[in-house]
Image (tube, rainbow, N blue to C red):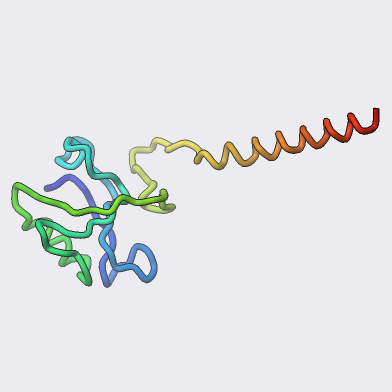
Length: 124
């Protein structure tokens, strides 16, 4: 196989009101992993020039299975990480905390410290 799993389709929408096909998992040591260009969460727009629009999930799977040895994919890179299956690597390792989970509380603490310092200086 090509070394990746997909989600989506007209009958199994991964994102509501979007029947596009997405890469859900890249298999370690598979063709896509070794190539290195495809990423989990990428939207696949076309396979070997065939546009993946309004396809049922099983029809998209069949298209990939019959793609041949030299496969050309047209993809759209995901802009933001998705919650759910796309973020799950399935290998038991945590992906870590999102940057916002660290920055937002840190900035709030810094702002509170500055406010306290200014209030303290006014009283002196």
